[in-house]
Length: 250
Image (cartoon, rainbow, N blue to C red; front, side, top):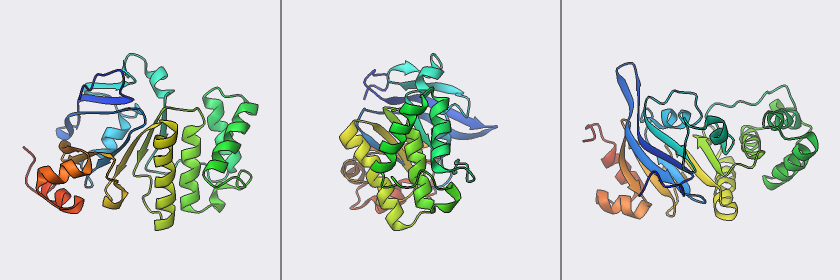
């Protein structure tokens, strides 16, 4: 795979990051194509959130390069960020504002006029089954509804790339399923590239690009069947156990 290809929605090219002397990422390289659903899977402490925070520019890029649709993030950070929608691991909605107020504020940050913002808000809320919730205060919503609102917010500026960091953490089974279904539909039906981080095996589908991260390195990469075949196992759980065991990755 050519990680520098302009066709890639996002490409990590030999990316490394340290916290003091502690390595969090060590020479990470992979790319996600438009319309592809990619899952970064790994145990706690594997480096998933660090990887996520780099394209958001919430951490400095210490080594390597991140490219968004072929352009270096450092060369055009504003342009790159305008093409990405983010859903962070920690909720970031204002609980005391209504759903509509939260979303209109975010739309304004992207320079979207009020009329256009309202049209997009109505459309996206309807698409995720929350068409009647615009006037409710966020604190009145369930955790699953709040997560779906965060996806709506991330999509208001029509980004072709969506990054989600452990978005189903703390959600019930039904809410997790609804969130996954919405993200997969964005990839399959609208051509949005989706990068989804998780530690949950049941969030991985056979058609996904899987990046198995361990101790800041890529332990395996590819479709589920290829990872299992390379590990000599019959299931993702077995592959995960074998590839993220306590021994250090070479």
